[in-house]
Image 1: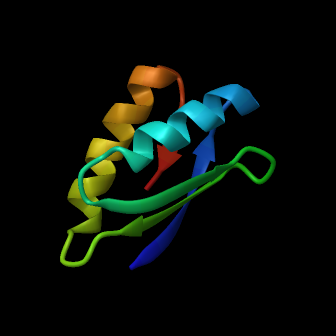
Image 2: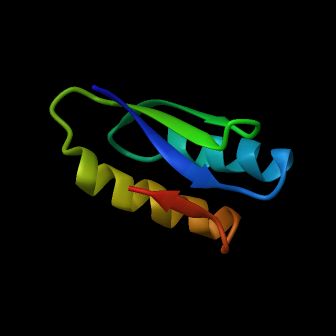
Length: 72
């Protein structure tokens, strides 16, 4: 399953770091952060609950950029 989320990120470098953090999160098959459109596209692994996975993604992204926002 693939979902798109609005994300608030301040710089392109931070967007790249957040994309990498999201990709490494358990339950995420792939993740792309588009800095220009301020969107995060996440493809979840088969059988994963998007709400639980996104909580972990948000936590991982906050480690990279503490003031980032992902609008779930």
